[in-house]
Length: 271
Image (cartoon, rainbow, N blue to C red; front, side, top):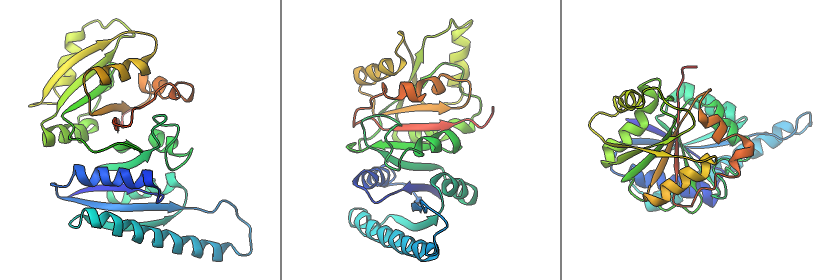
């Protein structure tokens, strides 16, 4: 059975992301973990154990309240509660090791793609450090069947078949069209060869290859999404690709995601 982790801080943004995922997989056999990570902002206090116990109590109380809300909308969803002490990155790392989820779902406020995650500044580190598929859902996003999925690529950043498995599964599940968006930065010696290699990862799906030009990669991708009524945008994260340039902190502010555009961020383990 597929396992999906829903990250929450009990905010409306987190709840919307969870609702989005529950709706997306409503007709699939999925085991959900509703996860809240809590940590101490200070140490050395003689009351540290008492504070930790209070935080644990509040975390579990919040999770139970969220579960009740989610079950009112999706009464048949299989959702387990996970209250974990530690930093967000450490907690998610451990969950990945222990349970190997197919997907992690988190919310963002919608002003910028990665800068304003609901879980704070270290959530950008989650995207950089956690080698798992992550779906980022803007605060005001309403679920829509992903009939068109844009895949921003430089035609060089798919190294393993496993890396794109979550996207392939989604596309098969919803019979989605995948629109590859190539950012033209370098002349490709054999573009057709590159396209064939990428297409080999997506047998049986409707694919198209598209090209955008310009110095502002972020705006180019956003304009393509708007012009083509894209429902979801996908990127593959690993060192040495344009992803790092696209989501460098100085560029992130330019990548304004519209509320209806969730992101699926994939990771390629090969350096």
